[in-house]
Image 1 (cartoon, rainbow, N blue to C red):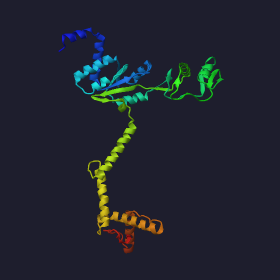
Image 2: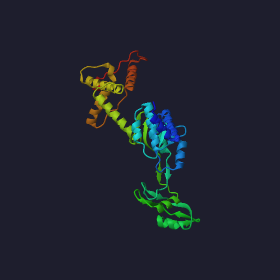
Image 3: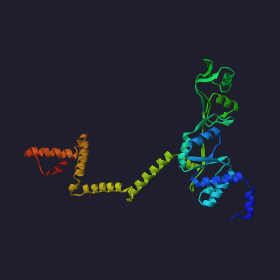
Image 4: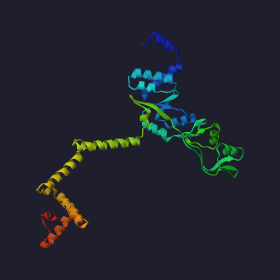
Length: 334
């Protein structure tokens, strides 16, 4: 129940604020993922282009911070969902809320694929090298040539009534200060060295909070780390003879190899693994031959060996067919 005092306080709040808070609450109810966006250095044109890119995928709502917090508190009270308190604490000034049912990482990828290149900022340190490429500037001759020469020390020449840059010139290294005049001349040349990307400051996904260090993690490296951890865990499980769906095939193969090794050490013969006896004999023969003569003996595949022996046996006996072909003995191979 709303008390009389609360009603009086509500009545003093402008209707447009109440309407905006309710609209935000409705968006919280409609969409399961919410991202806090920062638009520092982003102009209105870029915001409009971003809305077009996100059309049908997400809605961006720009509101004052206090209204955003009021909306979160109201939705939290109604929904009882977790993580909203953490989201509320991580809303900076001049932030917008993005509402979507699309995976937040896909939204981040969309932003990165649609970045803008913007001019260098005046009275600021450049985070990247600034290079003016050689070629036609398109600027007519006149006072501007002195600006290029004096302000940026560019090597210029006149050709076809326009100013040309003779060779590539680095005007600023990363970490250098860019003056107002230098920034103006670079902008006049159309140099746009800085990347402008909309950043996700924080995200809330149906109760789970995603800080920026998770949102902007290196996914390729993360996948490699997971694969490496999986292989190490599987290797350890095989060594410990732990049977599960991932290790059963490897453990069966391991058991077979160990059984063969034991069988080869015992003074018995098992016809079921005849091929393995032959392989072992060939390996041993090659090893001895290499030790004595320095080279191996040719390895004849088992089927070819059996076929060869069968033909020779037929030839000797003058038979056309044999109903039962016995495999050749292996004693001579040892």
